[in-house]
Length: 231
Image (cartoon, rainbow, N blue to C red; front, side):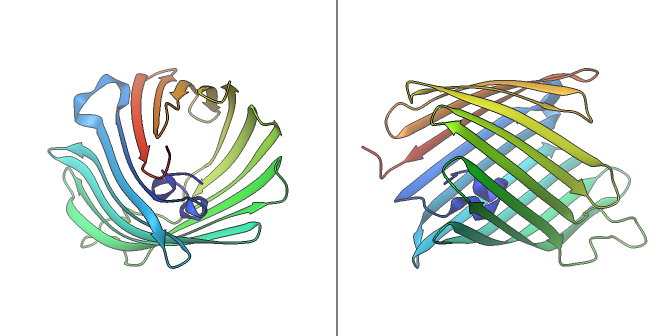
């Protein structure tokens, strides 16, 4: 299970035990105004896992806020999830606009080595203010994870933001003695590469990543996850 599933694919949350709290913060391209913050709370609920997440990007005249509640359930080797969100955006020269959205996600674990996933984000409202263009688009993601050993994981994901180009992501993770994760990845379309490291000291998980864009520069992200069911 993934404690950050409420921010990515709600279907990946199933299987988590106990209660967990996660926090993530990043600054894009070294610009303080492009600050991203996410806070999530997950816990067992009705034979599945429920979540509540708050996300904010930017400040001042350019910002996006999102609050979500979701639920995920696992049936044998299939995990499914649904999430309801409210999103509000403030855009210069356009003003503010808000919309409800539905998100669906799922994972199919064919074996311990091979997993596929899918995710759909769809705004429920028109997502427009007056005669302005849509500020929210339907998003479809699909991905594959291959884990040849317990220490190595290779992932690939396609993201289709309706009305925009298809984006391809790929990444690798290698675990050192089950406690330290070394990661690398790239976004082909944006010519962006990522390097990361993660630590798992007991009930805590600490992750840091640096993203390098060929034109816009460097972004930094720090994440902390605490699972209160772990010793």
